[in-house]
Each structure stands twice: as C-alpha cells, then as structure tokens.
Image (cartoon, rainbow, N blue to C red):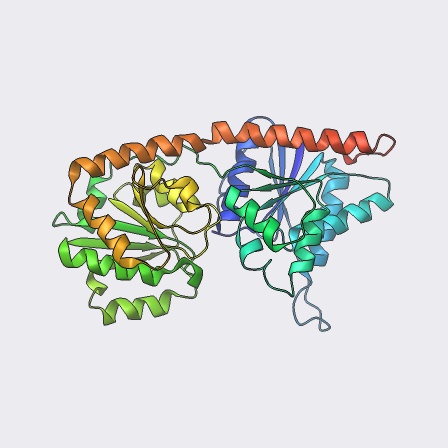
Length: 389
C-alpha cells in the first residue's frame, strides 16, 4: 500500500507512534509518505520505502500567524495526486482530520477519491476536544473520516461520551518495538548516577501540568527520606522552571537530575528501578509501556488508559490521581523487597510483550484493508488516487 501519514513531528506520543508505525510498515514493503512541517524526531536516518514531504508556510503581512492548515491541505492534495496514495492516516484529530476532509473535497472535485483513517491519541479529545470552541470541529472531522481508531478503550469511551460521534471506533493499542526497548547492561551509567548504590526513579514526559510532575517530586521526597535515591526527570516543557525551583525549596536538588529531551530513552530506563507516571490524563501511557519493556515496574495514577497497561499488583501499582502518599508507599514496598521488585520486573516485561509491534502492526494493516475495501465498494464508479494517469 501507498500510505500518507500526517502527524505532529514532536516528542509527544502521537508523533512517536505515527513515526514508529510508518517505519514498521515501510519495513514490510509499504510505501510510507510522512507529511508534516518538520522531520519527525524518530525519523532519524534513511530507510527504504520512506519519504518525507515538508509543509512550508510563507509569512504574509496579512496573517498574524502562518496559515498552516491551508498549506497542509494543499500539500496533501499534491502528495495524494502525484504519489498515487491508497490511503491517508492522520494522527491527532485537530487539525489533521478536518484538513484531510478538506483535501478530500478538493481531490473529489478533480475526480480523485481517497479514504482517510483518523487515530485519536488523547489530548485531541480530553483537552482540545472538550473545549467548546473546538468540539464541533473535532467531532466533524472524526465523523467525516472513513475509519477511526483510538489507542485505548478508555479513550474510545471518553470520545463517545464527550462528542456526538456517529462513526464506529476501532481500538488499536499503542505498541512497543523490542528491537529498541529492552533491558540493557548499563552498569557504568548507573554508577555515574548513583555512585553509592542509591535507587533510581525515572519519569519522562513533555512537562505539562497534566503530567503532574510535582506529584513525581513529592512522591520522590517521601521515598528519599526512607531510602537513598536519585530521580531522573527526562523531557522539557513549560513546567520545568517551576519544578526546578520546587526541588531547591524541598532540599532535593542534589538528588534530582533534569536531563532534558533525550532520544535514547531506553539507555536511561536501563538503569531505573521504578518508573513514575502520576498523570491527570493519559489516554494510553506509552512512556509506561516503554519502561515495562525495559523490565521496570511502574507506579502510576489510575488516569485514563493507564490501568489497561499497568496492572495493579502485577506489573506495578496504581493509585488515585494526586495520592502521592499511596504512590510513595507502593514505591517503598517494592524498593525494600528485592524479590518482589524482581517479580514485578518480570511481570512488566511479560505484559509489555502483549503490545509488541509484531502483534499490533497486522491489526493496522487489516484495518487499512477493511477501510479501503468499504470505501471502494461504496464508490464503484469513482477514480481512486492510485489509479491517476
């Protein structure tokens, strides 16, 4: 298949999943065309069957901001026509689903027809989609898609409750690539971080309020008072300056390292004893899954789809949102019992294997084929993009 993938090219979960999915599809022989304003962060090297189309927006005095939606629409029309795509897969509902709809209408006026699959990732529903100023547009884009997927059952349920959705939503979980995320021997790195044998706790995110990183720090404070420990905070974002001040105020700064954005997150997870993710909203919890694949038990909130990934009492522990004392107590129980920690580590890996990309990828391929088949059967006399002369 010739597939166009539209995503945000950032460190956020939707961009990471979209890129990894495209690379895996390309490895199986599909022709994958990434269409976005910057090369995705995980698209780091040349790979056969992978193409990148940059969306550029000129600045005009008339516009306060470059009209990205319009230029993306034009780019989609161009790529669909001349690369003869079979399907567009857009990640994150806004603006990509509505942009894809507009591109479809422009192409249809030229007698070219292409199906669109929209994948919902979380904040496009829980944050943006719940805003009254965006909700009608988000709902319209979803309903006009030819296929819709969500990354967890919780997100599907939330989408149907918050928006007037008429389309069936297929749940296809996020996935993990075990060729990258696995337990590694990084003892030299561990000694550099924790020279006195301290326990190492890790959190990764985009440092937004919804991630509740203050809860990570407060949980760590309780743990640190009982067990010598270090905290590694990976990522960057608007909350970082405030959080750095907080660690100083709590007298924790020498025990906490802000590592910024990191590409080789698996090397950091390789030295972790526990992974903390106390989010207020988390449609799936890809960061937790990456930790589990590296055999790191997870202490999480019960937000969104996290309990679908992190099984309480098996792969880690789950607590109410904001309950830092429960999270700390769970962490202390594991850190103080080597055999229990080892058991949870083994269980975390076993659970993560259920989300192996080798299991999830065929689900996407089957869904693409289903959507294309339904689309073509409903349009028997129309000309598809991949038949363009």
